[in-house]
Length: 480
Ligand code: HEM
Image (tube, rainbow, N blue to C red; front, side, top):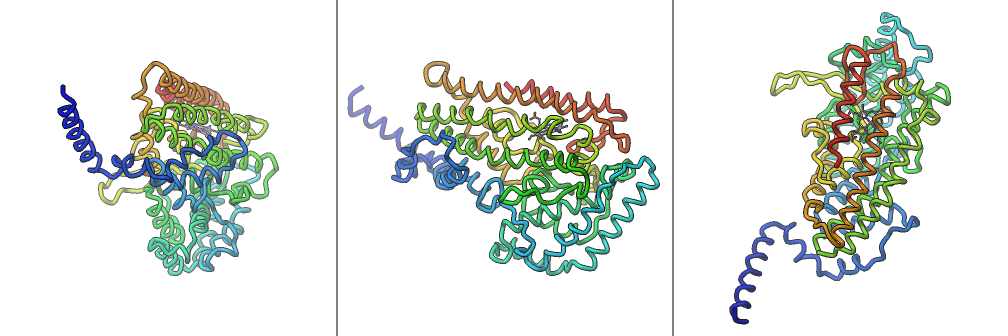
């Protein structure tokens, strides 16, 4: 082939490739962006493997990368909007900072919280029914007398219209958390959860808890009546790390400590996950640019961070920190929901599950990066995983490159790092199987078998455990 022919063929080929890339903005990002000075300067920044780098540093860099890659854009959007410019998401629980119309909710929480836990658990259904009814009736009266729902709705509408000056995002998050606590408290009426409440198929919550919830859930792109990992746990900490809405106010230090340590796992995990999310994004970008050495360095950052990250779970989920004798009855039940309603459009009955560790963002991101099938069905995700989190995971799944790696050289080394992530996840999943069983087999005679994430289970605990174990074994087997 002559030089001229080769030149003509290459030019035509180049034009076709550019035309195809320009069809979509994201496919064109290498052209638009890779050669800009900003990108080159980001690339030249020293690798941030050192522990001295703060989460804020990672967040700043993720935000800067938003123009360069879809994965970064999705995460930056999540951090900016749902996170109130921070991650884990910032929640401002300071009563005096809240708009006046919302403050009654916080005040009512303070009044109702000490009435929720029963120091002595009763097995008498009638007595338990009375407890539930009297708790609900008092709650309803307070909400009715003190909340001006019209003003609350105006604030929520202002937020929907983007008026974050009126209703700042960190207060919006804290309010979401407060309403979620109120709804779960109202749903159960007494903690430990007792069987008369579990047998209720639907719950008529007061309007002051339904109208704001509908608006908040629509904002986060969620369809459930139940709270979720974000609303009830991750947002239940102040930026200073103070655990806020409590289930077991007034009970022993062991109970309160178990409750708080359990909640802290998921909040802390998200904080420690930020450098991992950042490194995932950088690995994806490096690979797409053909910079395999940089990609390998980013992969090594991920694997190095996974051990301390998963330690937040390993170091807490044992009897010393989360008392087995207390957790099932006094902590887990609150996070369940197990009630539902008829779907207005299909006429079908829907029962909503409550919280589960399976909603934790980190695991969904790692699964997406490994190219594993999703664990939660689309329907369950749409009920419990905020839409911006779903979109970030979907972007990671679209851009992961594990399947495109060769066997030799740097590709082989990158493969090795993927294998290391798999190893750590498998270790977590098999440890989790054992620990979950340890907690779920604790006696709870006041109630029927139930987990927060799977509502009412089979008739007895042995059968229920087999049912649950099947999920965990299945996921372990898929983690390859
Ligand atoms: C200590 C009390 C806990 C118990 C008894 C428990 C129990 C379970 C059970 C039975 C499942 C399988 C069914 C389902 O998906 O709902 C599950 C799944 C899962 N749990 Fe937990 N869990 C606990 C705490 C946690 C914590 C603190 C985390 C993480 C921070 C976590 C993370 C997960 C994940 C990611 C899954 C999905 C399956 C997988 O990816 O392996 N769990 N859990």
